[in-house]
Length: 173
Image 1: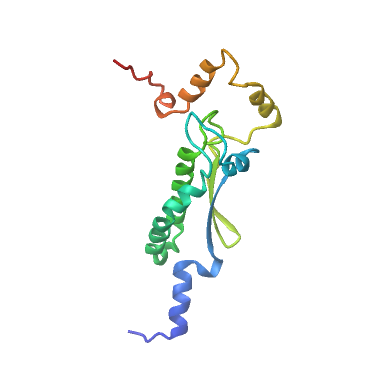
Image 2: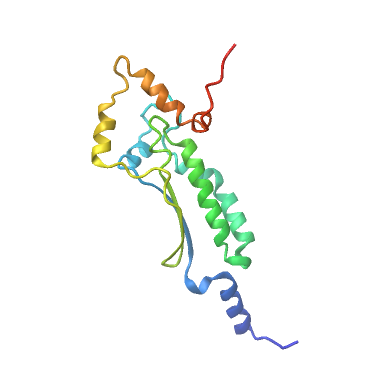
């Protein structure tokens, strides 16, 4: 067996982990004009579900899990695959924690992973960033007006799992 030097082993480690290409960075962006406002305002009410700090809370709840699974695979692929999975998980967790009212904010999570400056993973958000015209229409739907509660219920229903699957509402006895 050939004797390897410290330098040879370090070069092998750099190659196996991808460290020579730069650090591994994951992020989730919620890309709506009002996302920051909704995230930071603790005084807003969300009667349909979700709430403020919808990215921060899931990140703080799961960061140890993310770091652990990434660390376990760092010698396999530099942790890239688990970083991708972790960012997808964070995006899903933010989707459940974000305000549900219209559904566009909660479905706007955009996970991506970079190795140095190279983009290695990029999943587009499930909902596009609303245009100014779409925001004006949404603002006109003041759901607190009489007769608008049915529309609010319809929007809510179609943003639940059963509604997205096309299942009828559960009947109560």
